[in-house]
Length: 157
Image (cartoon, rainbow, N blue to C red; front, side):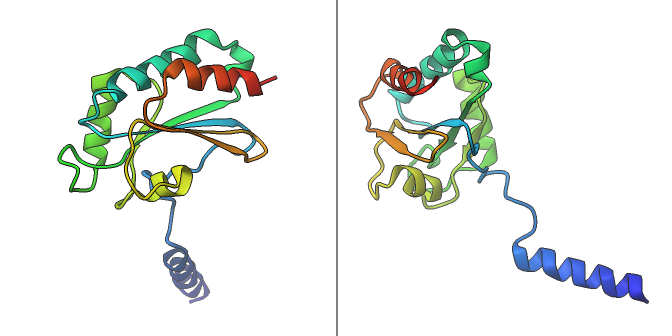
């Protein structure tokens, strides 16, 4: 009887807390340098900036530096811009661009975009670099991968 009561209480607690974290809302690496990229499937500039940023991080940082970089991407809408992204859309987008970092659907309506980028109006590509102390630096649409990478290098030891 005690086991049944314990199981019931555990299930209630998990339900009340929302269970396990959603796979499309990963935590940003605490104590690391986080690079968060925002995109949509129909963004032409994103098709250059995201892969180039990925390439620079993977080939131009030392292995020690690379171990302290957490890079993630979020797809913030479906291709039509009016529907929420799905895991299938994010996975297909990652494969299409050949990205090595994880890409997640941003919970509808742009939850992480608003949280980390702060804009109510979509401007893609978007990027945010967060240092280990939690200081955010935003890069508006029109930025280059080289600009994000140069900034990342300038704040890393």
